[in-house]
Length: 226
Image 1 (cartoon, rainbow, N blue to C red):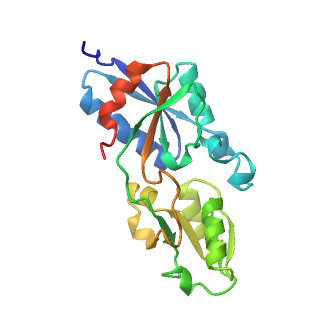
Image 2 (spheres, rainbow, N blue to C red):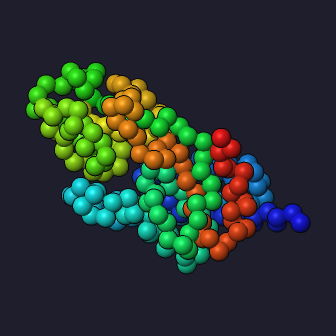
């Protein structure tokens, strides 16, 4: 028996420029798959977007970026939520399922700096910003002379702080910069031996209620076959 095609799909997404790009990418693919289906975005602000004065690891970690989107799934305001896979907690609540994972963009971390072409060029005491405890610990181990400090905010906010001179360099996911047409800002891509990327970095994850197998079937064509 063929699965009926959807008539309407609502996508829950954060409202940063990168998150909207990702949700719009999924929306456009769904519209191509299901031409008669209305596909809409539901923009939301998460606690992770609101709490910007403390390191992410100290205020709840990755789950802060998904809880509000999951609430929209539970009360049926949205059918799916689109996430950066690196922001999805390793263990999901049983009510939810990861129904598709996209093909991966470049999974590595990138150095962005207006003054230095590599981490090795930054003098002792140079300030390097990152929001990730993973990146911070690796940088501190490899470059103990650098001042590795917390950098919160969405991608545009982080670039603005760099351009204002608050940091000598910042570390970002190469995938996000590439997706927003900002690859020219990358001074160098960090090899995994220097900065091991997060699990799933560079891929998009589509989440839905585990109790809605029809949604999983609609999303199946978006999953990377690799």
